[in-house]
Length: 491
Figure (tube, helix red, strand yellow):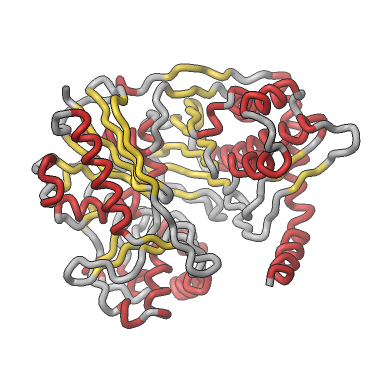
């Protein structure tokens, strides 16, 4: 049987799948990994942890399926910095996408480059704490002896490709999340000089879906000479995995966080920096992405504390029986601050409008709806930038809820489709692997269910959504005050 392996190097796990020529997932393997948090706001991992996990996953897939895959492709978490010395050894633990230690470095880079407006025009995004470039400057400021040893840098999936093949390279989708690649697809010498990076330290740029090399690592002799294909950033690979590859295609993901991704041919950034602009894994395409920080995380947090006895089926039944609009209860899902559109780390979760009249179902449904409103706000902002959302797919753990999917459809006023296969970035990687060896994987994209919007529900949501948007503006200053108070209490 001909197979293609897709690998996703995540933050909490490494996942691999084996896919046949018709796009059916015939096997999968997952290896859990841990994240180090040595100080508040820090998040890092040893890249060898990824490599060990990938090795285990590849060996498991190879041994259980009996034959070598025709190709392997690797995608992974964005932004996280891997820094290597002249021997190719890691000089410092990988500083992850969710690490927050670089606020001062972000401000300095932005100021020295000429302000946020110029940064966004040049790179499509502001310089954010999670991005790669400020991490380099942080090392220069705080670990100068280590910084001086750096000879090349890369992203997590690139480290795996290097270990497999010896090739040092990255792709355009991952590079576009570093604050170093401009919207024209070139590394910018000036901004790298601000961070003290030698231009020679940049990895080679290879388009997603191109063969980087072949497996040469001695520990994987059973896979020797299998082609290794450059994958992409996890969100781009995930979108490609559910068929986002033409203008009008979009993906809504309801995971721990939530995203709205829409393909665009035009590299038009959001001047306010609330919506990201990144390169896609398809040709010269871009995608706009809105991000909310607490999607299923909002529901899980509330359920663990106030509804632990409820099964998923009981909760779904409770929410389904509660009317649209939650009888006037409104939830703002800002448990851990918010990204799109507010970029406000001080924002906090808020339940508004409840009284002794309201039931547990009203509160739980308001959480579903609050996440829906946050995603709608991001989707509307993306549309205002000229991206079309006419062919929407929904993925992630929250998409297992029919009620949640229907709430999203009603809010967007569009039909949304549930893919037959939802394997995240690993499936997009498998598609890229197949394409690199000449297989047309377009038939792999199959939808199994449509959620059509309800006009009556849409009218209700329009009214509640108007209140939802006003709430943030009216209590924004209070968020900052309560955040400062909470920090003093904790200290």
